[in-house]
Length: 577
Image (cartoon, rainbow, N blue to C red; front, side, top):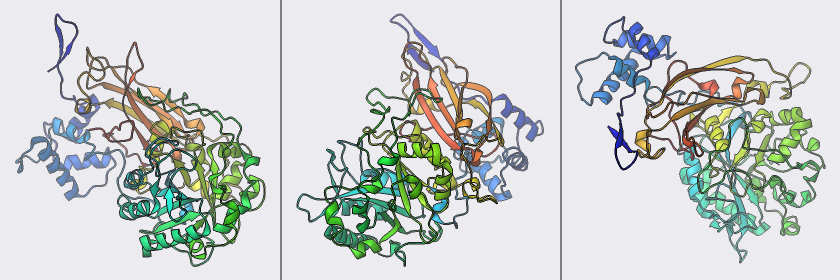
């Protein structure tokens, strides 16, 4: 029994019950137990095949039955081998036994690297905001352990110009030694995924320090380092071929000084990037605001075109060993327009970087050019410079145009980062997601997909939200309301192509730690390959802002059919109990 103090005179008491099986679960149990009190292993296997669409062997489903009985009844050797209704419900409500998506790599990993969306970090070394937080290897380790495959390091000379530091230049961020970051990358690179890790270097070094970095890289990584045989590659190898390898991506030394006057021609004007959209206002905490600080950055430059006080020195000499280590060449070729920069070259592949505003501007008139470019080359998108608090932009615009590296501040918690987490739950969480065929196809007249086209509905997703349970394990009894149990409601919707984006809401279930909604929603999808199912739970508060109670984001293309247990995560993306 739980109790809530209403006033000094008396207490209201509320029974905290077990989650009751929904009516659909009872009906399924009746059907697959042949109307009896127990479901046999054979009947259970039939349920898994017909309702859940699971292809399980005789031994597998018998093991599941035994594990469910053992976990539920805590008896080592259990005499019964059949499931009761409560055992059956326990199985369905278990994220361990009955998850919504698979946990294994299920996509073709033998295509060139540029055919994949890649889990990409921005300023991966920062512990917090972009202006005054510490630089450290800790956020790099955390990102790699989450499955992030692209780590960005800003490298600068130290004060005596004889060593290399990682820091966010011209800010108050405290530096960390480059060698410390490299050693941590080596140690943790393949903890979450065997597929290649790409280190993008934003280089502000003199040639002698570039040579020093080349030594550091070769000494630290040794045979793990992928060095192309030719100066530029005609096509990238595949993730499968590059398993266990480290790739370096930066601008070749001689090209730094050639791009001083770039980027102004395609810089975005003040752009709309409101968090108050179909998702509702950004989930906030009392001490952190996730909204942007301003809208445009008049001094912003392309990170690929970083030219600083060292620029005149950079072209005086080359560091051949350093240049030889660059697997993915970055930079904008000669020519003043973005249209020129997006020309596909037959004899080489490269990487181009655009700020979120520059990308948004480019999509207005160069959408098909972007897609044609990304069929072979890398496009990296990074947050605008005014996101001082490490917030993030909407990733979908980059993915819709084939951008492989949509770079995010992994410490900048908020809804947009939840979408990033959701996208990279795909393909077993290995950090590489194969791009949909429509982004890679070329038509008979050399035409490519145009995101501006009015697309037909191709799939319909039906989602029924039954009930929620488990908040008692993560939150104090009075966390949501001092005087009564919580009033939970769920928000369910789609993130994806603009025409697919929508958010719907269940009714509010008052005074109940185990809300039972049993509401169904239908979502017509035009681009199901890029659609993400969004689920949030909130606690209704009549006088103040509603309290956040958990969220998740799941790739629609990987959702398993049937009744599934969906784990929720907190604001930072950590799994709730």
